[in-house]
Image (tube, rainbow, N blue to C red; front, side, top):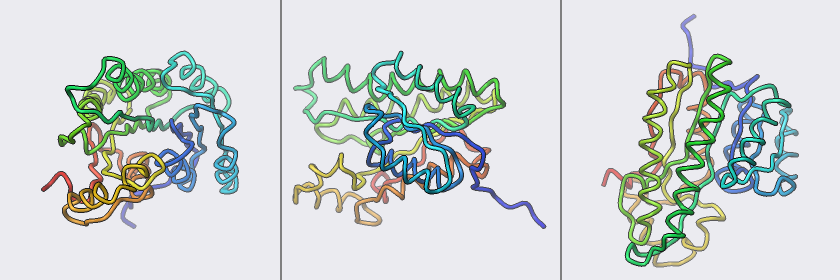
Length: 256
């Protein structure tokens, strides 16, 4: 019988930041479906009771954690609590991110600092905290949320674009340094996905039509499950030789 790839995450523990809605919620459910127990990083630890119930209905453990990633002490405490109560951290998904729409000449220092702190600084230091446990337990998987915006220029999104480009390169740097511990570090880079966060922009007919046109190969808006499936793959044994890579999930936008 030939060896076959495994996508099973049974016995693993995962932390997903920004798990309350959108991509974070989809990723948390997908990891649980694949067999993992899931800790949910939340700005309001009491705000995801329905998600906890869905995960527990699959027979997995779900742990809501108070975790504002802009407050690193709070984030570190959440990771430490997860390790103490779930027995470890095998998978980290740095899902939290965001941006502010503004032309480059109008961007403020406050907006710049907030976006970089949210997308870059939190990803780096939360990964660092998780790594310090993973390296003592034989390894792990870190998966960062990049964006197609890290590969192409989007008007009015310059700070967001540069922050996501930083995540792509950070992913390479951490992969090179932490491979010796058995830790893989990868990223996913979605296009516009139908989530509560993108709903205001995609509800504008002109913007929606432009996005459909720019998604050059498939000409449709993405769904959260099309991102969470890639995350499960990168977290699984099937991806054990993949590190430092960013999977661009963009329907063909960046190949145009």
